[in-house]
Length: 387
Image (cartoon, rainbow, N blue to C red; front, side, top):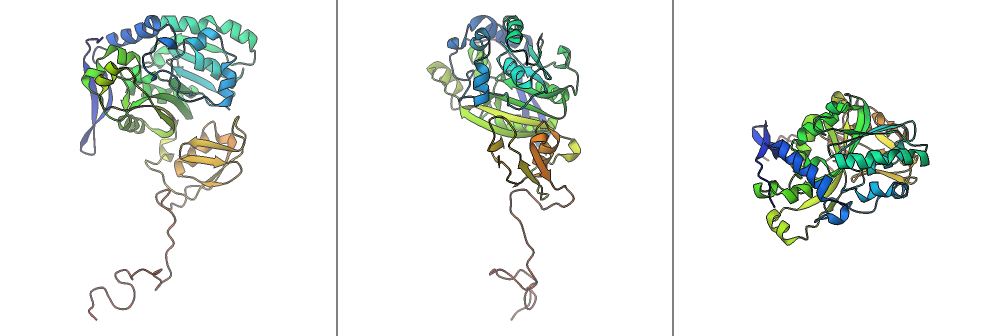
């Protein structure tokens, strides 16, 4: 089944080349109506899905598993997502969920944030909003030490229009929703604006290893199953960096498409469920690449489910109480974000040691070559002198 919509690409010129930034449809209202129908009327539960894209990949962390047992059954049954983008240790934070659906992740965040926190969910689907709102009173009565839940009807492309002021939230979460948006750049820019300085966008979504065909983009079922709107990973990373985010990948897992008809439309495209962390750092303190200033960070072992160590991302893993050399951007994250109270950061940016991760260079004493041939101009005689 296909829907007749036109595909558009927003491009920008970068260093003399044209690079796609986002993709969607010119008839955005029709796309949004299709998504609203699929999640509000076609799907009754996760049992109705045709692919694994909209189901969580991998077991959630222990704290999340425990929280899920405390949620209303209806909220869990109508959950569609591809990850677990609610980190423990966020007590007292203000959380915004983009495309909150039945509210599952909002309810988990409410448990983690506690009564000092605040949780807002934005969704455009009446049926899902009704499910989310309909269970709040009983949930809070049973679990009084939880953040207030505020579910709002709105569009994730217009976060401000849903009443979320710029610089007002500490963390934004989202679970397999941004791929459904007809204008992903608007979503990411709105998220960046809504975050406070040092804020974080922690979210899971579907990505693809190439820009998919127009046929796949126009396929109604593939749109609803979170595949035809998936962003090419490089386009996503470029978009985030242009907006100003410091991007870290947490995890990814392949998505299986067992339906032969759908697989034929998608061709050789390979999809993954990936969780990213996007931090809003001070522009003056964010390097375009990882740079070495000799700074170290020590994890204090104080986050839930992370007594012995903590993974900031898939490449930056801390052992409790063991100092680790970190890049300037990592030091900035651990000094200014909600993670600051869990880390001790030493050093500053007064001395630059070059690109991070390339190893130290120690200038040799004069006349020493460490077993290598003398460089031009070193040793006896000039490089242009004949013996």
